[in-house]
Image 1 (cartoon, rainbow, N blue to C red):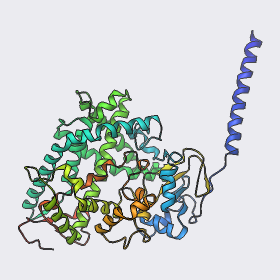
Image 2 (image 1 turned 135 degrees about the vertical axis):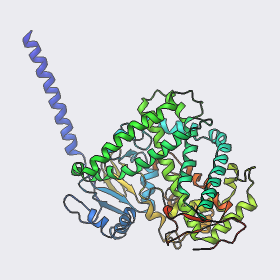
Image 3 (image 1 turned 30 degrees about the vertical axis):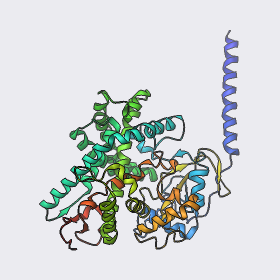
Image 4 (image 1 turned 180 degrees about the horizontal axis):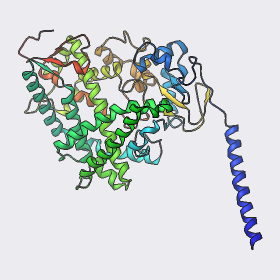
Length: 486
């Protein structure tokens, strides 16, 4: 008997050893990535000294390097594996569209894993059954046409309240108002109804979620530092950030968990998530992800649009004229939601804003889900690829004077170039490629709905030169007054 057990043990050990050696041979024989050219890196810091050298924003510095090293470039962010930066229209299309399945894996900082339900949310999970299920439930249900049509009267009411609150603040502060807090709160109210139903109204929840979104965005940069330089985990500031994210996670579990315990209508996102029997953590952080991305993207785009209109009085006047002549309003004087699609210039302003100030200048980081190619180069599974959308948005070959706000040009592009060269412009402009983040393009027009303050009063610079910056505030005037610039 003992001999039999010895033989079995030897057989199992031999099988394990053979399997291990087989995998080892497979790894050795796997063809490595053919890295494109790039700037010379230094030990430990990689190319960070070149990126941080001029003090430019990260995406601007990357774009300057791309102009030197070409449309396909290898960059090292600290000690981590190098990244391929793609800065050409056709190559970006190859990554995001024609070979989207090959690049359907995600590259997310490991430190964010606890706050992303172990990478089981739409943005953080690789394309697969879970990703498709989450995305389908959101797009076909919570932000589907029927659900959004139910939201329309509530959105109009929120817009009227937001405008009135902004006017009150302006009256109390000599005509000066900081609109971002008002815009954020209106977006949070909308997202809360999408998640928990049209009847959901909870001021305490809205205030807590506003704070949680701000906290999560504040500490996300520290997670990137830790991901780029692992030894930084010993720094006190990084340790504090990690501890703070844990506190945010616990508070989110409590905040979002409360409405989940109440009866929910079948059209809301939370009802879908609960009906799929996902772990409670996946449900909670899928909901928070919607708040995080919705507030950050829609709020930032709206603020930039208001700022750019403030610097372009002619465009602002043209927009106001279009709203006044072609849009019907409800009894509160707010443009009806269904009218937004008819206002071509309003759409053009929103799209030109998204061109000049893209929500994610380098898109969502992608990884090769399997061995593939890019422009003929072999790309091994696990290789990180960034699509340099900023380069596409500012390409002088496509855009005349790309540094200038020219909403009329976008109208021309929509009618002309876009139809003939959709492979060049669509993924760069308006996020219609679903692989960018998984949410698709239906919410690309969301910032349009928040531009209505321009219907009620002109916007002019309050102080300083950086009028498009949210923290500088705006100077608001009644339509019956002549606005004066400061």
